[in-house]
Length: 441
Image (cartoon, rainbow, N blue to C red; front, side, top):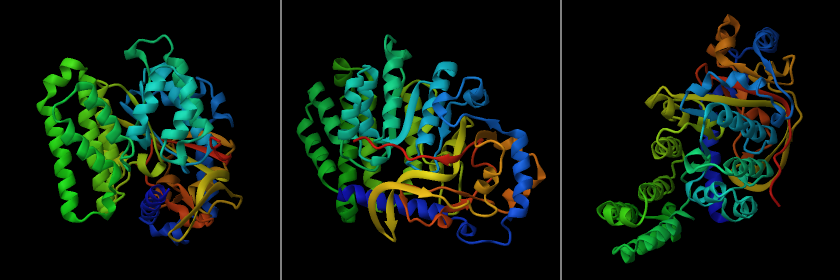
């Protein structure tokens, strides 16, 4: 529990820092478009929006054709304005299904622990629905994904994989790197299977990785642990032939990646720098591309991670993915009112997980206020379509705000607005009202 709270606090700091990149998000700014302009902006949206059903699982293939141009990209990022909104989760479930069935996407990557995903993915590949819920409860490290909505997505993946060959199956993989809870034990299982001569040395390194929190290490200890993990990777590389003789190339590649994941955890925890997560999550996503021979990926994470965003102190995962190749498209998710799950936050104190709600009108002059004036309560809109108009060009130039929170919430919605930029997203999906995701019991 202490480890989870520490990670949540670090994550909250990252989100708050991200939100503070534009200080205009915390107070009214003379440059912010006021409500008198919101109607003009909303009229542009009305001309371009694609109405959608309130329940995303009922979205038809015809309604989702707006995804077709994005499907040409190798990676499609799907965001969320909170980590606990049922409609966002259901929408991403439905979009993934569409991209799998209509455009051949194969990999579902999520802002979740890499190690836990290896365990869950085996049940998905085996179409073993009976194991899914218990594995989610036992192996998932964070409450954000322990929901009935994510379970239902995994159920669908199990059903889809029935009767498929290995190369036809869809895959579930985590890209996050905040904990070494599962990585060492998974690595040990591989090393035992291949009966490597360096097992004793490896076991010592892996036991340390599991039991030691780098946050509390001295610089010398940190350097030694990194050196040991590097030596472990070197040993695996040296005995590549022995490993391949008893196993597969995929298993060998996965073992190498596990050592990288463990080093990433050390770096993030020791340096207490949550910004490194975005760089490493982008790196891990690219690794999945290579591991699955260029298979197309749907990427699930917070708006702040999937957006193409860069400042003097921060680069998002989406910015890394956009910068290294022109093969990334991204959808941001917005809402105005309703409920969502989040931990209550008071200063640096993270409290209980509960259903939070927002009933107040969105901030005057914000994107959320503009969207609330649209003729459809749920819709998608292409950002390039609306930014062809001078009113939206001006609004973005004047740093119009939009709302998003992380895994914690202080019950002060005005604090969670941050400027929207023209290149952050390719599409926006908006819900006027939302409901909280349903935690597994």
